Length: 334
Image (cartoon, rainbow, N blue to C red; front, top):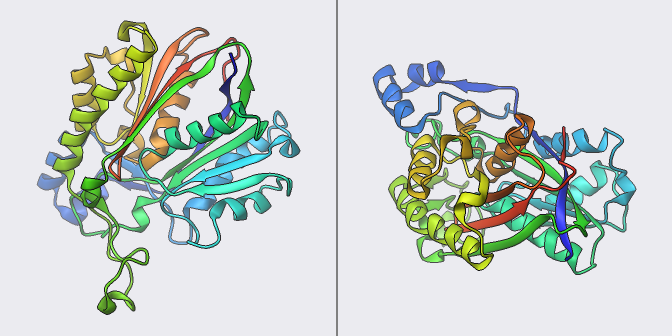
């Protein structure tokens, strides 16, 4: 059976931290202590003033490409998933294709998606590799929420950090790697997480003004997650004839401590079956699933033969779950 596997994986985060102490100074200690207790987030990494998401994306990819393990001219597909690109036109993928020194024969395009971006982007790369359209894919995810939120909005500032991942996907003939994907959307709730005036959907009076800060209705996101995500994880397992007890690890979107712990409770997960990287980095959007997987591998939580679930969900509202089997060769980590 033809499949695809992650050959290499890396991530990059900014060096600048936005600490709990700094937010106590901004919003007040009592309020921030209460929020931190609920979210579990006491630190988040945010870009410097002159740093943008594609800088993190470039750094992630260069970690892999500079290693010498992956030849630049062997990559014929570049997918960049983000909702905070350098420009709306041209795509950030075209810019990164040049900066990374990839061949002109490399197809390059963006996928405009947020929280679910890694699973969606990996599913597209998987499909193109299995179809024979490409032979090796570099898939990059990044978002920089800190750039588009109101620094005085106490509902979002404590949650979000910035980050990027890069992964090499190759065709696999052993039956390991990606086994299946299940994707979905509920656009009726698209206003639950929105960056207004950031595109062309504007009234006449809005045409000359800057985008408004991103806003989020946290309760709607929370309810959506608990009602939707477990349902489709179970459906993914059902249609692959796999019992949940066979899953070694769940790489969950690290939205917040409340969401991760509530989701784990609903799925009846053991504490060893997922991790909590939000504590260190905050919610860095669609890259959290890849960063979660990277840490699970780096901490030797996964071995050959393990079956895992990658689960991403959020803005859109959208969700993506993937079933993956670890092969004899674990991904190289950078």
